[in-house]
Length: 387
Image (tube, rainbow, N blue to C red; front, side, top):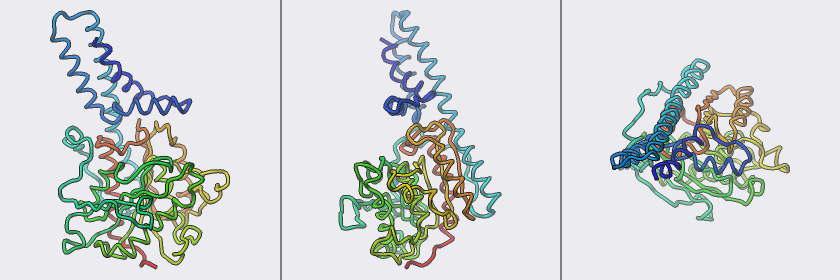
């Protein structure tokens, strides 16, 4: 009985350590099965230990039970390796930001503290909204309240006598351009910014059966949201000249980078061509940065757009990502560094897979601290006046 009980966590741990890469259906299934151990190794380990201890305290202890105890020991050893990889993310991020600081002095904030907030990791794996944050949900930036909805998080009283909003962080969800919704990813990053005086927005966009079918509407939507911030934001306590940083996960990262590289491009701002859509910064988490189809390859591929006007950029990717391989991020970073005079911070997280921003893992909290270091100077830098 004990080996049967321990087989799921053992398999999850094995897949976290050695992910399946091909064929894609098997890789996707392996990713889903490996997620518990990959993102919550301490919780899985505690469960394995509890089940094993409960069985071994009963009498008689059989050979099968002893075999199960051996499986539990191997599983916990594997989980320890997974946890060590999570902690290595902090060092990778620290190195990436230190390198950027040396190349562009004064462009990032002070180095983040290296301590892992274990209380959050252990007791609050799902990022819950802190009491000091006000949430306004299901707002709309376009005529279709379902497809252009977003959630807005601010510190309580911000912009209403409780202090000026320092900047706006927009997060765009993933889902292969065909699924997803606000406030499901990067919640800890959104809450962290709201607590520091930012207006944090989690938004959706028009979803489509295929990425190509929805382009360029995805991009137009986010620029429409920027227009909403500039025109309607003051009614919600957001200054019209607040610096805007756009972040995204997976497919959302593609849209974020396209937004950064097409500021003021009238092709993607129908009806508001004169609006200044310049960003203060852009962030990509485990993003896809290639073309969205053969017919749109010249305009939907970020590297087909000049890098000269790019704002400061931070790109973070996992080395074991099977959905969006890390080579895509490397390609974009080469393009940006080849043409942009602004910082391009790039970090690869050892052993990280797709979707690492869902829970409060030690890895993701290190990412949140690193992004804080990236955005702090941007809040003070301001932005060009709205058009």
